[in-house]
Length: 380
Image (cartoon, rainbow, N blue to C red; front, side):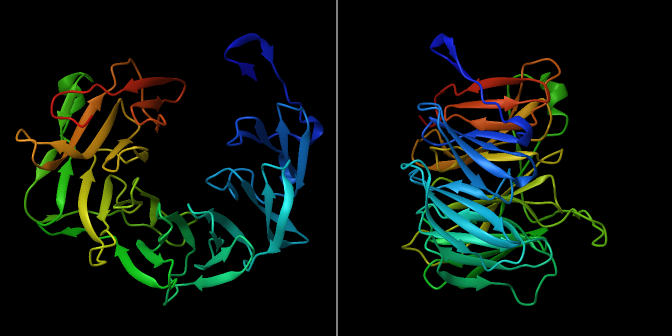
C-alpha cells in the first residue's frame, strides 16, 4: 500500500501460510478485507490501528459478502458444519458479531442485499431455481420458484434502486419481477426475437472503425419497421450452456432495466418501467445491436438515461435518452460509436467515475481514461 500524498508512507500485509486470494477496501477507506485460500477465513485489517478481526469459513472469496449501503453492517455468507449461514457484523464497532442465523438453502450460490438494507435475497446453486427473501434478523419472508421449474438455476439477481422490485434471471431466457409488498411474481420479461415497429432498434454501422480509422464519433443506424433477430442454439447437455440472462442492471432511478441474453450475445435489451403513478406494465423499449458480442454494459452513476458498453474492440459505445433536439423542447434517444485513439487497444471492460463524467477503459495489459466533453445539444 502506498499513500498518494506521502511518498514516505507505505504499508504491507503478510498473510503467511494461509495464503491470499483477494484483497478489497471496505467502504470506510480505512479497512482492508483479505480473503485467505481454501475458504479458511476473511481478515479485516485496520490501517489506522493495525489491528485485525478474523471471521472464519466464508463460502466464497469473490461473492457472498456485502456492505449495507450506509456502510454500517458487513454481511457475510459462511458455512459451518456443512450448513449455509449468514453473519451480520457491525462495521462501526470493530466488526463485532451482531447476528448469526442459518439459511434455508442447501447449497448457496450467492446473495444480494437490498438498497434499503432491510432485505436480503439468497438463492440456490445451479441445479435448482429457488430464491428466498429474508430480513437481516433472519426471518424468512418468501420463497420463490417459477412453475413449471425451468430445470436450471438462477444466473442473475438485481434489486430495484428503491428496493420496490426484485428482478430474477435464470438460464431459461426469462426475467421474473417480484414486488416487495406481496413478494409475488408481478411481471415476466422474455427474450423476444420478433420485434414490432414500436420497439426502437439501433444497429452498429458496418466497418465504421476502418472508415474512421478509430477516431471520432459515428451514430448508430436506426432501423425502421418490424425486425427479426437470430439466436444461437445451445446444447443443454454441456456444462455452462450459452443461454439465459448474462447481465441485468437497473439505471439510476429504476425506470429502465438493461438485460443481456447469452442466446443473442450481440444485443442489449432495454425495458421501460412505469413510475408509481402509472399503470404497472413493463415493456421492451429499445434494442442495441452490435457487430461483436457485448463484453460489459455500465449505467452512468448519476444520470438516469445514459449507459456505455464495450465489445472487446478498439471502441466504446454510448446510448442516451437525454439528448435535446434543436428546439430543445423534447428529449430523444441517441446511440453513438466512439473510437479509442490508441494503438492496439481493445476495450475489455470499463468503469464510470463516481461523478459520471469520466470512464476508465480497461484493456488486456493496459488502460486509458476518457472524459466527457460538453457540446451544444448534449446534457450538462
